[in-house]
Amino acid sequence: MRFSTQTLLLQLGVVLLVVLLSGVVHGWLVYERIGTEAENQALTLARTVAADPDIRARVQEISKEEGTPPPDVLAAGPLQAAAEAVRVRTGALFVVITDETGLRLAHPETARLGERVSTDPSVALGGEEITTRNTGTLGPSAGAKVPVYAPDSSDTIVGEVSVGYSVESLSKSLARDIVPIALTAGGALLAGVLASFLLRHRLQRLTLGLEPEEISTLVHDQVAVLQGVDDGVVGIAADGRISVFNAAAARLLDMPDATGQDWASAAVPEQLKQLTQPAARDAEAVEIVAGGRVLVASARKAWHRQEDLGWVVMLRDRTELQQLTRQLDAVGTMSTALRAQRHEFANQLHTIAGFMSIGQYDSAKEYLARISATGPLKFPVEQAELLQDTYLQAFVGAKSVEASERGVALRIGPETLVRGHVADPQDVTTVLGNLIDNAVSAAVAGSATERWVEVELLDDFTDHNGGTLHIVVGDSGDGLGRLEPEEVFAEGFTTSEQPVRSGAGQGLGLALVRQLARRRGGDVRLLEPGSEGGPGAVFMATIPGVMDSADADARSTSREDHSG
Image 1: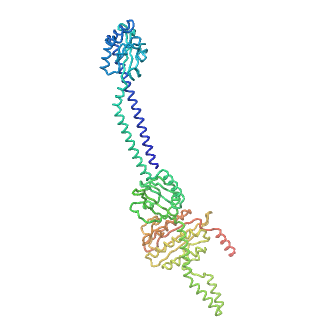
Image 2 (image 1 turned 180 degrees about the vertical axis):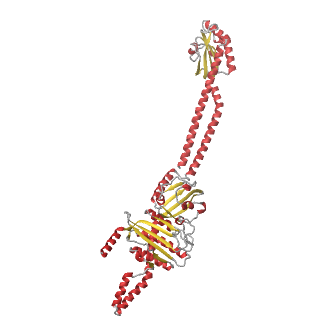
């Protein structure tokens, strides 16, 4: 049997039991009230009969006589007539008059006259009034017993008067009063049954028709799944309250558990809230930067049959993928540069072979010395000798090849001084590559005749936690115009004329590199917004802990030894 059915039957049973108990108790109280009223009525009638002067006098006369008159004499006597008249007039079951010994002087059944009463008269003959419920010769009754005093004395008891009303008449009164009780009980039962069915319907609607065992299983499964996946899951109920916020979502968004908060006022990125707008039901996944991570966010509307359950927002971490993409871009850039220089390298080898074949050994030696001084490959980057780190030389040289292919001259600024060794190429590649790519794009889109990008790099080893690399990148573009400095660091901002495609990484470069630098204790900021016709914008990045000072110290010592 389903739990909801068990609950319904239990509720119906409880309601029925309560109604029955209430009806029985109410009926008993009514019966007691009717019995008490009958006793009081009998007591009043008994007092009235016992106080009648004629009855008092007749009882005293009989009490003074020796013995008791015969039943036929008593039946024809005035006491019997008076008692019967009162009984008939009031509807009592009996009105009995006795002498001081308890012998009947008046009784509804004349055959019992002169006999002793069936119930104990001692209390009334002792001078006290009493109400009783007992069974006599006429059946069960509710009545009262009152002493009869002599006419000339208030202390001499000459008999007693007993009046009773039939229990059957009480039951008839109860039957008349029980109808409203039964109707009330029936109405209460009907209301209880209706409330039970309504409660069952509401319970099924709230639980989506699931049984408690199924709900318990679903809760355990939900906790296991939500806490076991690496993807962030945020559930928004139909009323706008956050109902699910798993540990992965808290980690990816770098914020505490937001379960129970209002979605509209929660401290989550605004792009996530826009995904749950009614107009964004079929919106594509978007990339956002949160907590120093690149996240892919998507939202889906949740339905159960025709009921709106709210929204489910999924968060997937693409930070490592973005970093790998940047590394691959750097490797690809350098590979492209190497392929571009392959022919020049081959020509140099052919030249050396030609010198050797004709016996011009001195010319070959001189040519080799010249190649050794300048390197076997020539990147189109100006003042590359200011970079003493081979990784930076190769990366900037590769970027210069790409820039040259787009008609932009990449040059190293005169203030450049890099003495150390790059200890974290990944972060340096991400920050430097984004800034150079943006600058090259700005130079290409600019109106200046001469297109150039200038990069200045300076390492600083005053921090004991590692060397800091300072990067300044400027271009010949048309600047940022009237844009506020912080607008260019907003997620989704791009100067590209092409629309931003989901998953393409556009509009994330500056926001990503700023968060990356700030996570290391540095920053990326706009130094100059530039002007129309050039020069363009100038950006500065500070990245602590990415340079190896030990290698720089070794180089410095080596140079001092050679100079000495």
